Image 1: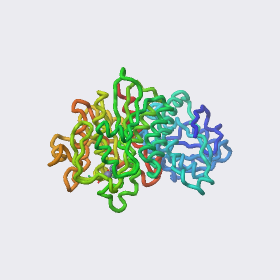
Image 2: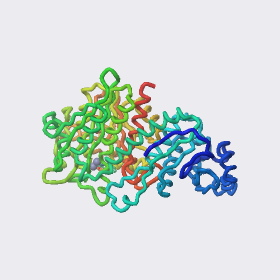
Image 3: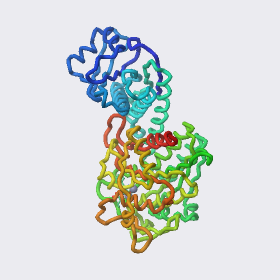
Image 4: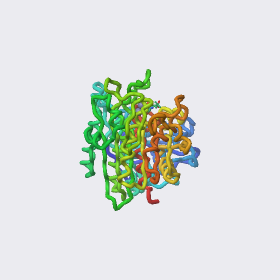
Length: 498
Ligand code: BES
Ligand code: ZN
Ligand code: ZN
């Protein structure tokens, strides 16, 4: 789908549908008054009837007479003083879904009525994100619905500030197209997206963006002594991969992002019970986000040296699977006792995190669907926060701030020295489980990871088990992977020097 930016009066918009956002308890903007007059007061009639009160994301579809655009969709923006950019993202998302259900190919959004404290660039970026993400659905395997589907082709942004709106919408477009790609990866069934599939995706991503890409296959992984990653992959017929993507060069600050890439998490021999396995193709959401981050970073030509690492394996039970009680030595020489084969994410990340040392980075961020416990603590679903932990308060603060800008919110959980006691093993250096009752399980996961990062390097861990998956469509989300983290970490990287 295309987004174009146009300067036009509302009366001369010729489109299938025009979206107008309105703040609560305010007079109609003058542009809208002109349109209202032309339509014979149809808009003001709806408003004075009190059927539409501009409550946040309330909608009203009006069929207009005597105007070049035959339908308008009023969308409430709520109270002006409570406005945040995500309301524009939400407005664009629900409008796009409405246009799709009307089976229309094109529509317009009036940008200027949403103007608030935020810049036109930021509003336009949010709108573009909302439109593209709102249009997303994973229908690759649908036969009948796909045949009757009308593809949305164009959304026009109507504004007086063409330059600013073009600038913002092109960034939003790029981000959302990449998040859509990341969602596609997450939604791809695990029968297809084995570790080698992710490696191939990274290779083609690198090619189209002129990035360096190194894929370590099982022989390399073995030679390098990444026995933890190897162990997790043992039960699967599809062997593990460690993918390293590199953008930029050492003249710039180096930042490493590491993603959990479990292509399917059955739990292994500690098999997941009941319904807990159903969405476990999502368990590579961290790795997928890392791919997306590298893609956007290079397209935006960020002045940084960014290393993206994805630790990819499939966690399966079989005669060759790793077992509870097994002990493996990770890349940094520490021995890991496997207390539970379902706590596999931290095990693959142990090798990936130790590998970051060689880059002497200014910061390490890992992103992982690490623990159900984190979702228990903070909630689950696309608007739930991710947990953030780490060794550097400044880094954590920067990430939280970036997340509030992109509305991929983070909530800090503690990681104190005493938490490391929790992951001490009686027979090895560390074990991959905290207390057996699993209380504080998200912290235990973080405390385990901490053992594998260099003490002097600022490190933050994002546990995205909550927001990685959406069970329903909502605003600019649809069923399946959300692509959480891409927009957030790009925002963080763009603000790095600020
Ligand atoms: N991949 C899961 C965590 C998860 C749960 C992600 C729900 C997304 C949604 C992880 O590997 C896991 O199984 N963790 C266990 C850890 C436990 C065995 C210590 C958990 O959370 O129960
Ligand atoms: Zn697991
Ligand atoms: Zn997992």
